[in-house]
Length: 145
Ligand SMILES: Cc1cc2nc3c(=O)[nH]c(=O)nc-3n(C[C@H](O)[C@H](O)[C@H](O)COP(=O)(O)O)c2cc1C
Image (cartoon, rainbow, N blue to C red; front, side, top):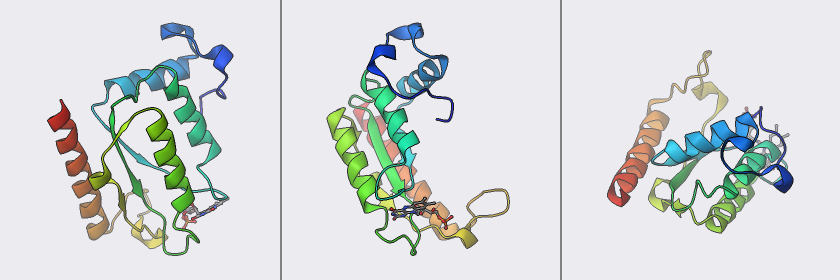
């Protein structure tokens, strides 16, 4: 995400004629059977850098009918529980005709004390909830395949 140029329709070309970071992103999305997303909310919206990533996936249709879900990890202190970011995400995914798997879209509150020094989530219940969401998403992708 950090290497992507800002989206510009003039730079949105086919195949290898795009920026290498865009080509890499598109290849990874195209190769995936499903996507599980997780994003914070900043200032009442999706982070600009993540929205930029999504904009690069519109033109090549790589998310068209792709099974996609998201985990909302907003902690109890988040004022709106990141509701606006996830509403915006749903709107964008509808626009590209992604196949949103609602049963795998879950809110799992993650607080700082649930994350170890190496960045790994240590809380067993949260880990299990994420595994359940992944399982649900994988099953949905397998059914569609
Ligand atoms: C600049 C900034 C703006 C944020 N804006 C929102 C917001 O509008 N709504 C929200 O629910 N959370 C907001 N948050 C909280 C983040 O989405 C996220 O939950 C939090 O930064 C991660 O948890 P931590 O601060 O405990 O590490 C914001 C955080 C930052 C750093």
